[in-house]
Structures are given as C-alpha cells and as structure tokens.
Length: 351
Ligand code: PMP
Image (cartoon, rainbow, N blue to C red; front, side, top):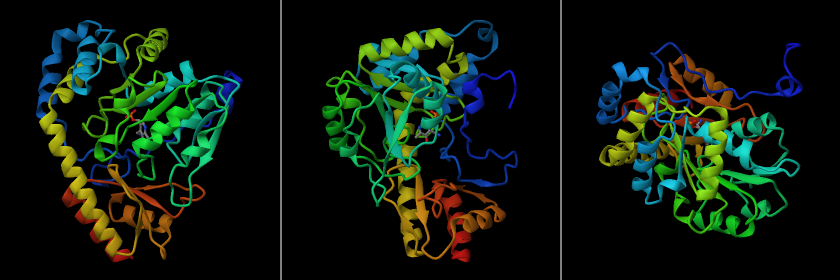
C-alpha cells in the first residue's frame, strides 16, 4: 500500500502468473507452454531482423503480420488486429468495448485475468457458474450485460464449447461485444473465426504463445468486424502505437507462414495428450475432456495440494489452484513424450 496510489490501484487484486523458476532442471508442466521449439524459420527470421534495423521503430501498423494472418485465416486485413500477447488484446477489449454500469459476464471457473481487467477498468462483472461437469451453461448468459467473455476451450478445465453453443450465444446477444478467447483452440476446439462475417459484435482472440511455441515473443491477434478492429486500433494508438517490436514482428510472420511445422507440432501435442489421458484414467484419475494443451485432473483418494508438493519434490512442476470447487484438481500442461513419461512414472509412485 502506498499513499501515491489512487483508489483503483489500491484496491486491485493483481493476477498471479504461474511460477517461472530460474532452475531449469524442473520438468515444467505448469504454464501451458509448448514443449517444442518454435519453427526454425522463426529463429532465422528473428536473426535477420537484428543488427542495424533495431535503430528504427517497428511498423506501428504491423502491416506485414496483419496480412500474413489475414491470408492464413481467409479474412480481410481490416478484420485483423495484432497485439503484444492476447492478454494485451483482452485488456484493450475490456477498456474499449465493455459498458460501465452493466455487468460483464464470464464463467466461474475461468481464466483469472478477466476479473483483474474488469477491476482495472472500473467495470462491474457477474460470473456464471459452470455446471456440475464444468460445462458452460450458455442459456445463463441470456441476461442484461455490458459484454461477454468466453474462453474456448475454457481454462483451467480444458473443455471446449461446441460452436453451435457459441452461435446460440451470439444470436441471443446482438447488442454487446462477445469476446471468444481462443488461446487453446488449435488443440482440438472449433474456432468461431468463420462466424465473424455474420456477427459484427464478435471478437475472436488467439495467441502465438501456445500452438506456435512463442510465449516468450508476446504476440496475439484478434479477428473481428472492421468496426471492432478499428476500435482496437484507436485504443492501441492511445496507449502506445509500437506494441509489437521488430523481432516479434519478424518471428510471428515466419510462424504464421510455416503451416507444416505448426501442423506437425500441434498434432504431436494432441497425440501425447491422448496417451497421457489414457494413462491417468488407468491410474484412477478423473480427467475432463481436454481439447487444450493441458489436462485437468483429480484423484478421488488423493489430495491435490499434496500431489502438487510431492511432484515438485520430484522435480516436476504442475499447477494447483487453491480455489473453491477446483481445489482437488491439478492442471498439467502437455510436454514431450519423455516429459509425460517422467510425470506419469512419478505420479504412479504416489497414487
Ligand atoms: N487466454 C487464456 C485463456 C490463457 O490461458 C492465456 C495464457 N495464460 C492467455 C489468454 C494469454 O496468452 P498470451 O498473452 O500469452 O497470448
């Protein structure tokens, strides 16, 4: 607490990210990073963007990256916005699209950044409880609101929302902005990008952090109507026009263009996930139906906090959330086959 903070800063409850230990000996399955390196084309592009070019500001319009994304996803360049991680785009959407005085709706349980942004921008919010099997009850979103945010697949539950449900939501909420946060969509969910042409209030947000192995580069993008994208550009230019640096622009373009590498690595993660799920079920775990690059698991006879601590002692970091309803669950990111074998061997010894 400081006398220099205003009331809003004083009352903020900041988001706490997962641990990023300096000790590289951990098998790190706690922050949903991709276990595979970025495409070799990305590393090459970043290398060629260094040197004298760093004297110059990056392109504030991010034109080349915007074009690469528009081509890749079959939309117009005016329907694409790029940002410094999808977190930044989500923050801009909260700042610019959601209506004060009317509650923003998002599920409980979900990505814990949403309430932080709501607080930061002085917005009210109401949470919609997940059903008993962690499904998102779409009907419950039919109530007066100042905007809706839905992650698909949801985090940390890993479950996907069928596209038909998203369409239903959009049909019942024509007046407010609906943000679909598709951070994990490439691991098995159905993207809402194809609906953008029909719903001018739909903003689909994706990231290069997960399926393109670039969490360290900080690049995300949004696809939505020209109206929404123009709004995001206004907000961006009011904070800082240079949100994406030269190295990130170069690397991100190469990542979007190397579709073969993207396909190979995402299929590898999916295959490893399916194998891991089978093993965990065999060991007696309840495992949600994951369409993400992580699994959400609970053992009926074991305490999750104890499992977390024991795994950590064994050099394996997973995520434990000390929150109501999920305090007996662990979220485990999908690593390489070798990493998951080590995880499964460690867990088999405990349960
Ligand atoms: N949305 C969800 C649901 C996430 O889990 C994350 C990653 N923590 C993000 C958005 C943000 O990802 P990034 O800022 O790296 O694009």
